[in-house]
Amino acid sequence: MSKRPNVLLCISDQQRTDTLGFLGRTLCRTPHIDRLAREGTCFVDAICPSPICLPSRASLMTGQYPHQVDMMSNKDTIEAPPRLTDALRGAGYHTAYAGKWHLEPDGHPAAFKGREAELGLLDVHGPADAVLEKRRIDDWFDRAEGQASADYSAWCAARGLPDGWPVSDDDLRTRRTPSMSMPTPKRQADLTADQTYDGWVTSLALQFLDERPADQPFFLVCGWFAPHPPFKVPDPFFDMYGADTAPEPPNFGLQGGEPASVARSFYHALFEDYGDRWPPWAKSMAAYWGYTSMVDAQFGRLLARLEAQGVLDDTLVIYCSDHGEMMGSHGLWHKMAPYEECLRVPLILRLPGRIGAGRQVTGPASLIDVPATILAACGLPIPDVYEGADLLSADRPRYRFSEMRSLGDWHGIADFRLVVDNRFKRVWNRGERGEFYDLASDPYEQTNRIDDPTAAPDIDRLTTALIGWMRKTSDPLLAVAETELLARN
Image (cartoon, rainbow, N blue to C red; front, side, top):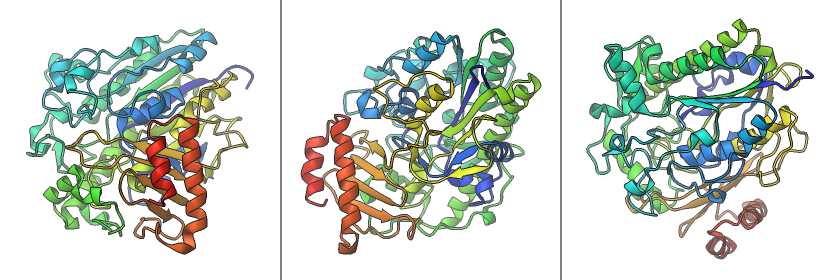
């Protein structure tokens, strides 16, 4: 291929790697994503730079870690310059974004009221109102629509449809303070899949494809809300999987090796509210799989349009998710934990003639590598400030990192930093017990080996890598981390 490829980047929300049908880890079916993997390359061990929406998405767009761009919580303004789209636009690309940049953007502060915790807006820097700033998505993209749920609600009203924004359904929320979605599944009885928020977003992306300048390559991002809870799922996806097809995971509930803050955290309290027996969770898992299959169907609409336009094979297609979902493992609901269920994410690339077909690549990979990979595939230089690397290069990093900052006293977790290689995971939990897992022999992280003397060489090696990364990236927690990590915390 001599000309620069088009780029389609599709981002689901809160999708676990084990929902990918072609991997065969669960009964969840994803035929269109499976096709992408069959005709492209899947990085099966990919992680998110932070297991929470906007910090992870900030890395996905900037090629830097969240602490480097001041995006350690779900604030709604990326301060880093738009190097990715500036480079693409400078090379003649038309850039467009459809859907979730984040949950409630662009000047609709009333829609936040009572939802601050759900959106991650309760922040140690101040009250929620202080971060309800207008996003500067127009600085990044030539065209952008679908970022505000209020616009989707207006679209529903104009067509005589009930408001399909799932976060607004109080039946699916906890009565705790702060309010937040619960794992309770519910049928979306009044809308088809194409009338949901995610169907609306897909239709916007299809419109962008139809209306794009014919004489320019394009960079299009499609950001869905699903399968993020609440699990309000339309037919036929709500009943696609039975609860009896979702077996209890080996690490359901607390495993004993977690730091003490996990047991006292808000998300463990929500786990206990829903129940420490698997049957209710099995129903939720089945609905989650159905929600994922609905996203796959929307992704299929995009692939079909690219084929109809005759540009599919001229387009670098990337499918990923910002983070996963705990779903009761380690006694946790939701995300923001260092464990595999919410750390590992789908990451699949397709570009015939440039990317091998049917490959499953193991070893460290991260969403932070996506911007560098896009620029390299388009024949453009990678900025020196990028921490990510070209996934298609033979010289891939040995380690990848992830981080999280507590959202406040109500949250209850310890700040953490972690490093993974192709087998082990080392977690530093600020002020608490550290963690070390051999993922080859213990994929469900049931045995914390931080005090195992036989693991000391690998613990020390990964600890050195973690400190080195924190130093290189000017992590604000470097000093306290060095003190605690060197004490084998």
